Length: 82
Image 1: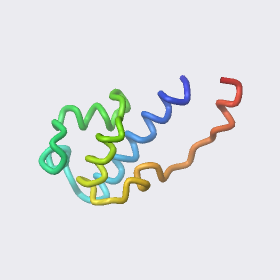
Image 2: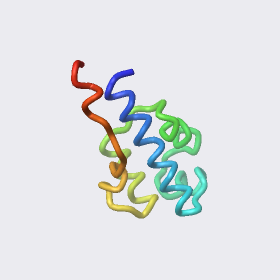
Image 3: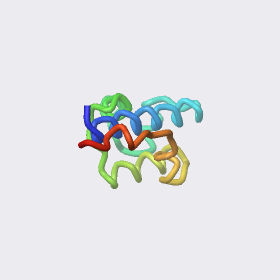
Image 4: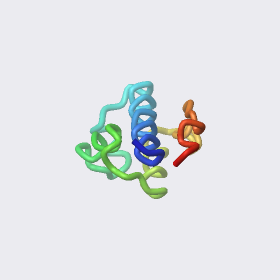
């Protein structure tokens, strides 16, 4: 894999983690963000590219500062040769 694919997956997992911590369903996120629940699932699985606009919608729906979506461990050194 490459750095962008890995980041997409990790951020998707972070969104799912925050949603579950808040005891929200994907339907709750749909209602609060306007992002279809099926698309929420794809974002959480790392199968959809996140835009800044979409990240903002997730932050609002999850009731977190946008920087919280990026709060995860990441080993940048494994991509050194890319």
